Image 1 (cartoon, rainbow, N blue to C red):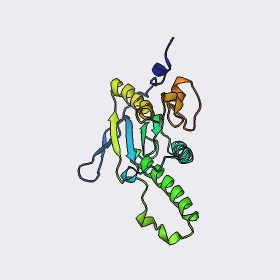
Image 2: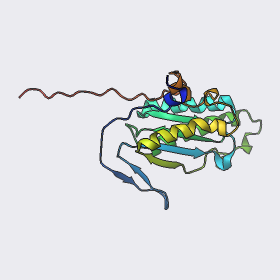
Image 3: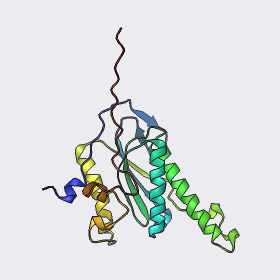
Image 4: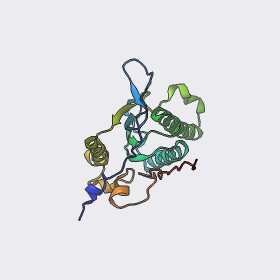
Length: 205
């Protein structure tokens, strides 16, 4: 009988291969796209402030992530939403790059929470966009291509809430991909939905 932990790290990768593309980034930060690797992405809230500390905020982030997944056509292999940072393990999107995905997710979430904060404030002039930050500007992007790393990264993500003292077991944290693997639950974010292979047949000459 397989354990929930073993089930929670199983997934299948597509076998497609494409050319390497290098994207220009700020000095000291390089991102490599175009090899159909998975990308392990980490982004922290500004100065580690807990912008994701409430269930409502984490639900909002998960909703935006799922909407972005559908729009840009990438596979979420794993994720976890923590109070002050997020981890994602995704495929390269059909539209844009992982950087595009992160930009969209971060901007949409920031606009929603800052907009609500302004509406709820009696003194709106105290909340100009230029003075309020939700995310750190940069994010960490690690290309995942080895079998060992494809197992290691989901395990690390799923253990994050336990390590952070938020829950006792990974399945108790609603805002991760653990239960999707362990119990085949359809969560807020659809996990491991790889496109069906298409067989192309050339017409007879």
